[in-house]
Image (cartoon, rainbow, N blue to C red; front, side, top):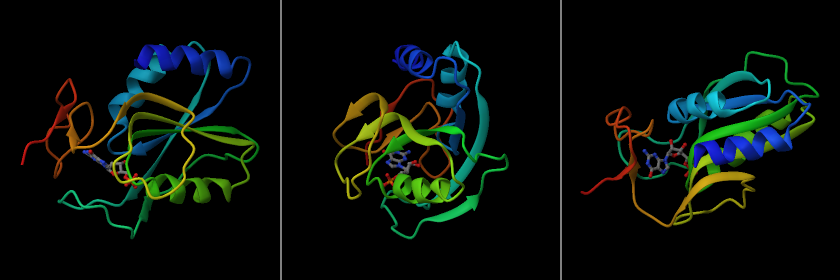
Length: 157
Ligand code: 5GP
């Protein structure tokens, strides 16, 4: 699925050099694999927005704990998310990134989870659509655990 999305991105961004904005921490493995499958040149930077603490309930109080470090004015941005749930983090990041005057901002997520969507966020590329559940592995954690699992699992409580 990651290779398929990388193929589409490589085709859509042919002759451009997008900036991949990885959303820490959950997207780090997806971003690494995706980047290695791309056949175009990219620049990489990271942001971190915290919306979840050690539990699984979504906090609407999103904080930016790491901002971008490179100049993204007039650049094509591709936000790389691990999972979009309520969409509030993405909506927050979208506004934050837009304030720097990029040319375009698009979104690529490993998982598109519909269960609790609140913000009407546009997702341009999704590897996999899921309905519900709390997922871990392949970068996704539960209280900082399970990120290293090579596959994605639904947590049982
Ligand atoms: P949203 O703001 O869309 O509700 O949540 C986005 C963030 O919440 C994701 O980047 C991720 O860090 C976390 N999140 C949402 N759903 C899950 C899930 O099922 N598993 C894990 N591990 N994190 C999740």
